[in-house]
Image (cartoon, rainbow, N blue to C red):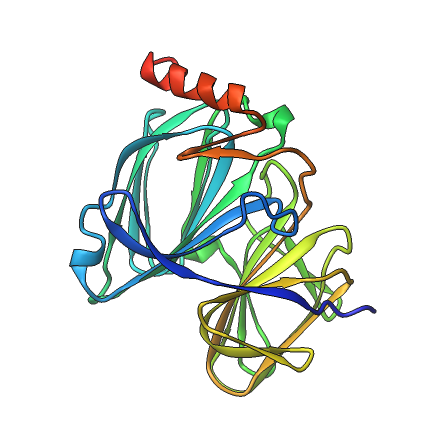
Length: 279
């Protein structure tokens, strides 16, 4: 089995979004190795001032978002009447399709907030489909405790470990993806199979991990090369998001909350939003 190796490292950089919410961001809108993912935002704070304004009502078209909270709550409201609030360890998925208007509000748990929002691209054939939303509370996230004590949580798609396939609750993404969280409290390792047709990347959010002899520290995204297997290890506490998915070989044009295939489509989205016909 060919083990995937690091092709490049991308450090997260400080940014802000919504009403001044402070985040660490990694984006790859025009990076073919990043596809089908577009952006990863890490929200981490012990100060309410970093996020108190939240994300007031705003539009999207052409993407899906997956929000995953390690610590803290996340309230969602949208034009379709969906209202959801995640608890610690929960996730929520939204497909904007042709248009959605929603708001999001992060809320601390015991003075802590730590979570992620991942943007997933939609192929052209699905960018104008109806919007959709589902939330997944912590008790429905698939969990697997390994012999070394480390925990694997599969949120979307499937992950195979030692011949056992773990299926996450989110299976309806626009293209097939796998999104999982590996948490280690001591010296541990994770060995799994990955679809060789998928691209794969790892975002380290705690500690450091080793991939085929190379160390990746917290706050860095490792884009992996081709292969059928994943082998990572750590000699201390670590937390890692695994993102793997079928690439979308189409033009990407990004403007604020809209991601389409051409500038004409972006201009149409802006016009639809201004005229009240986006949704």
